[in-house]
Image 1 (cartoon, rainbow, N blue to C red):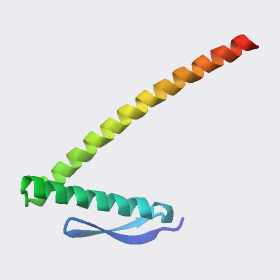
Image 2: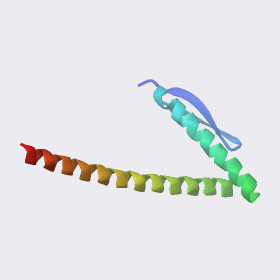
Image 3: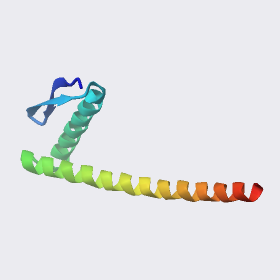
Image 4: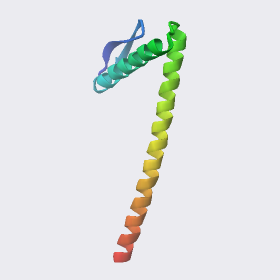
Length: 94
């Protein structure tokens, strides 16, 4: 499988990595999002400590992930109920 060698800058450091070509855009986008969050927290809270900033970004990302997963679970349950209802209606129609 072919991989690309890229560097992603997070904060003031560059991280070399090998990624699949189809994942490059997603990886670079993730780096941009992290850097935007770092700038946001630095300006909002006046923090300069990179460890504190990265911890806050990690926490923020985890909260977003948990919220997304909860929303996906609710959507999945709704879809399953709808499919069961449609299946029951089709079963009655036959």
